[in-house]
Figure (spheres, rainbow, N blue to C red):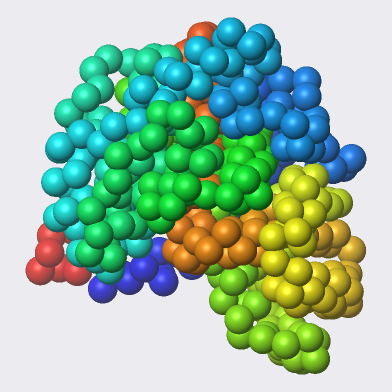
Length: 389
Ligand code: ACO
């Protein structure tokens, strides 16, 4: 019987021999769309949303402003900002169909799976037609509501009603805990959501655009994006960063632990990036916030980071492996008392703005995304009946 390993092996031969004929494994460096939403400059280490540096936005803007910026192409004036805050707040509801779907999930379900399921359940009962701005509003507003509801249900607690006066970041923290969060917690969560709002043609955004290009709906595009973000090579790394820091435990254990991992060819979570060959620009603001939030946890994390960077250069010379967004995301979200399995779905809450903006942008001059594959298999085999094989 042909098992998965055999299939994978024959395919990897195909991948190697095809590389020279215009195929790039992982589509590395291939331009798959034009976008006015965000520019990722991997050499200079800059990330721009519609002309604004993300570090500037993270320090000065609220998430709702960035959502407006991404969807409408410019920062809102004060009337427009009030309008979008109210509109997003008005949509923060938990429909009965989603609540009953979430209640039906085992408490052991990963929150990222619960979020994907909730978005799908909501879309099944609420979405009609191809992607629209209304669908974007509905989903960006509700994703934190769905996630927080599941987090409470799995602890045997009832979901809470949103508080319309709270900002997007503050309301999410409130829905998780039932406590009005401190100003510092809100500032940190807000900056986190801003920093994670968009990031060029990353894997999950590409997945969303592919689905949108078939003229499917916004819910389906975001379900695909959540599925893509879940993997550890993309958004699934931060809880593993937390596991790594817990396993290292103390400053004097860092080098031994990291050397052991690298000598066994284990990838260090929170380091390396397909595009950034220098420090990830999102990492610095996250680092500053993490330092303020919990100096003790930060001290260990910073020591691990510095040791890891030296060792990555020693074990992987010339690969330019730097700290990526996930490293200090994990440290920061941990300091905000979020459990590790909420890190990646909280990333999805932030990125929902960018995913939906890309879906809407894709629809403007849509052309079905349908790349080709170069066939490297056999040809012209004559069918052999089963008793002859
Ligand atoms: N630790 C150790 N070695 C690494 C790491 C790492 N974190 N990242 C890359 N390398 C090594 C690879 O082993 C490879 O070495 P080799 O040529 O000796 O085999 C070399 O660097 C190049 O690696 P690639 O896989 O070609 O790099 P790619 O661009 O595909 O990878 C990725 C980018 C997937 C993010 C990778 O750096 C990685 O796995 N990092 C750890 C997981 C992580 O932090 N993910 C979050 C990414 S950020 C985000 O998506 C939001």
